[in-house]
Image 1 (cartoon, rainbow, N blue to C red):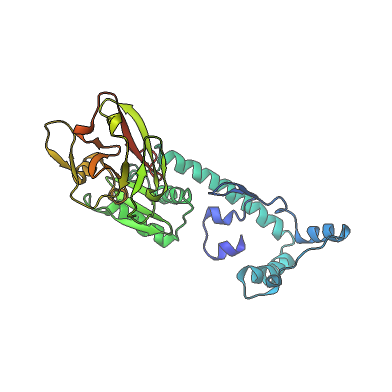
Image 2 (image 1 turned 45 degrees about the horizontal axis):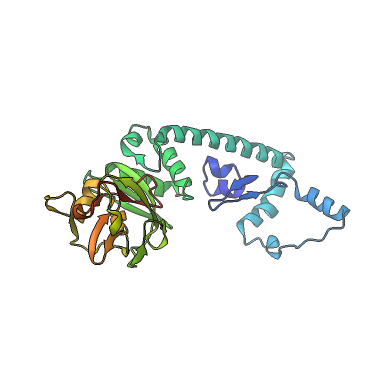
Length: 306
């Protein structure tokens, strides 16, 4: 707690180390002895003749936490004998305040999914804007320093309506698109060609799933063999209804509101050199059947894609 305070932490950081914490990949880190003092643990171990490993780095003052433990805490205890317990109580208060701030942010967020309405964000006070952004980023395991957070807040709120700024953070990217803030995985565009049928679902190379749904304008069942998924290279087009004009895939993406960063890894469905469909958006008119199968593409970072 002291280490984080001297580094200028906020409420969540001042809450110290949690006794239990869920991991993003699943599982739980549990520290059931966190409230026990070192002296109590040593007494317990000696009384039961337990053996343990002593980390030699614990005695090195070059590490900030060790310096605080060895040099600062003893001075505090000499002046304030109850300092350790008082600081622990304060950490508990900070943790409770952090929970309340998270509840406030969840209410301010308001929507279902992972996209934040910038109109909703702009309607809040600056303090609540920062709180909401911190909460949203924390849901993805991301944290920003105060100055970085302020730069992000100002840029996403003041960008021109026709601009789509992007902020790279670790393995994620923050995008402003159509007056919403998206937190997406940063995935490089791929070049694989993957065979697919009407049973396959997870398509790992393209970072998404293909789902088949019965639909009047879906693909004719007889055309569902020898299919491949490929990424767009530019210039692809198809007719969305018989007798209609050729429509470029680029325009179909724009009309469907597919974010630009997803277009580079949104696969197209081909069969023997013929473009069958843009999954989730359009099926070639000449391949449509009255009782066909509609291919829907669901990126892993956009589960409510069209």
